[in-house]
Length: 285
Image (tube, rainbow, N blue to C red; front, top):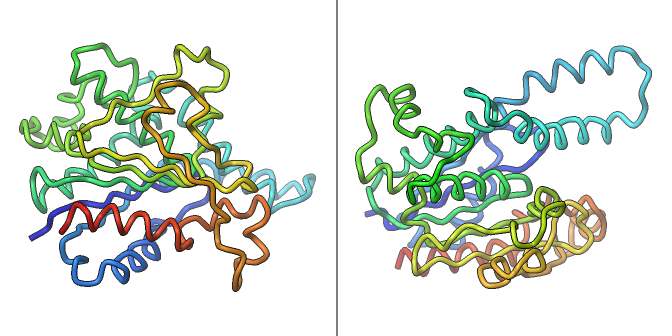
């Protein structure tokens, strides 16, 4: 019987729906006999943004007036994701709201496998900000506080539009992170979104459960990945930062592990995989 759910959330840039396949395979190998106790699901929100970004890229590339195509494409897709998710997010049907809907739908799929089981999230890059905002909004809604944007502004309306019915109490608690026991962020760029605010306003999510543990992996060479503890007292109390050399500087990672390209190697890193495996094993045993 399934004991724990692993939910993966991708980061910025051009991303395919199968982005988490390698991560899931590596974790199943490490889990061994316990792999059957873990249901693994990927959240995919890049499809909401991709078609629009591709249209802009194709139009610009066709002019032949820009250089450094690969870098420009990364900037357009990567920073375009971040800007698109935050810009005008309070508008009904915004990409912020749609991305949150994909998180909720993925959690509902896991809930169907076993209601009430523990959840561990693994979020790469921008996915850490997307997921953190989702959980923060869910916690505000659960406390009866107004939510300005996203599906938690009116979760009943979202459920009726998406499912054609209200959520059960069990589903509502589950998709709100009520059973979340772990979060692993890799290459997280939450500081980019909050650095302009006064420290008193930089408030992390509340621990969803007494078992909750948040590990944040960052590579000092990765300009898109940051430690989180320096942000505020709340983050210092909640998050364990771990600095690593993503990829380990061996094999085909040697050209990426010591420079900003390390941003795309976290989910191949043994230290990251071992930490996720240990978290899952603790909950699934």
